[in-house]
Length: 578
Image (tube, rainbow, N blue to C red):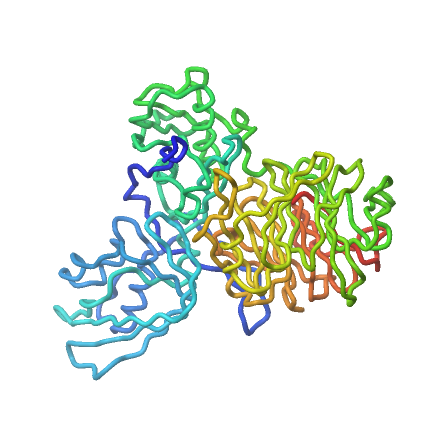
């Protein structure tokens, strides 16, 4: 085990974090899609269900399911609905299951003192004690038994674990990101977790959870400066503004390691709206004397997990090669790339210096495709020819170009020499996802890979050492979309944009953990959509008419897809970093 990996071993877990299962804001399969946002009410607005005198058993079970969404003090609110014996033995730490809606039906004959109900529901996902949501389909069926004690119905038989309806989850839990280090150690990777909205000591809880390490899928992909020896304890706030976090067992760190440690903590707290500045202490003393008054995000700005992105400056046309987008409209980019014909798709490197274009015969005609790559202001060089190419996508760290060739070979081309140097590496973790791999894109941290396989979307991790796709880490996200996906792009490090074959909700976003799926505006766009790209707040899509642009940061009433000046009614593809 490498030293870097040792830094990832879990440490003390905060048992009072109050985590429970995450709901999934998915697209209905049989009705018009609706935007469903996470709902995070203040703690004072939450109504805690309690048993009602002489309450009928079916209503008591329903209130119990609502109370189960409140995880504080080992689900103390839900235990009120149990008999004393059941309250003592109920294992609420077992698997937590989120369902769309729980339906109750009476089982057997009800007597004066006994009743049994079966809960049936469509499963959406599960959540583990660390707040990690996993999308999961199928049907749930559990049996709950009740007994009348002292004239009141109470639950005396129930399976281990928690069952929670989606609406209850969104009333009581919020998605918040933990941040870990990229393989290079110079940037941050979000690891979304679900925590109680009503948590009164959120800063302590999040840092304690951060100290347990990343989710298993990222274990070999990211690093952390919170080693095994660390534990986190609440610190005296002394009435000062901001938040104090005190850690024990932290070894002496170099100045660089101290900055990395602070970056993880500061961005985790800042993005969760925990008030700063952040006084980080080791055994009651400042971690770094220079920041005795506290750290801010400006002190670790270079680690910003959501750095600004330039809007699209280039597009690709079949007849005119690369074109440059300016205020007045599109014009030829000039140079050798404008002479490229038959362009199908293009992509920029993360630093904007290199470009790759896939060219081929006109649609409907047979023939090989060619991948050209090189400097934006230089000459295109042929990287390879193949029957099919999925991608390409640039790795943000080493600048190599990744492609799945002929549906079987995963290759990467080193750009920058006289000619691209192509080598093959292990494709198994991708090939096992499906027969038809239609798209893949590396995220902007170089940690995750998104894949479209047989119309479904998958997300997996890339090894910190070597960068290969990690077996066992790929999982499907956006299950409610079925097999309608045509292309995928990263809007940022925690959000995917997906284009679809459907006329309803032809472009959607999916959170990287799969918990939230939301349709983008359907105004002035006509599915199916064949290509999608993103650059910061702007999303680009190719529908049956033309290349369109959507400003997702605009006021809701102004969010409509717009054609790009100079490219209206022209077949063009977006060219952005990715």
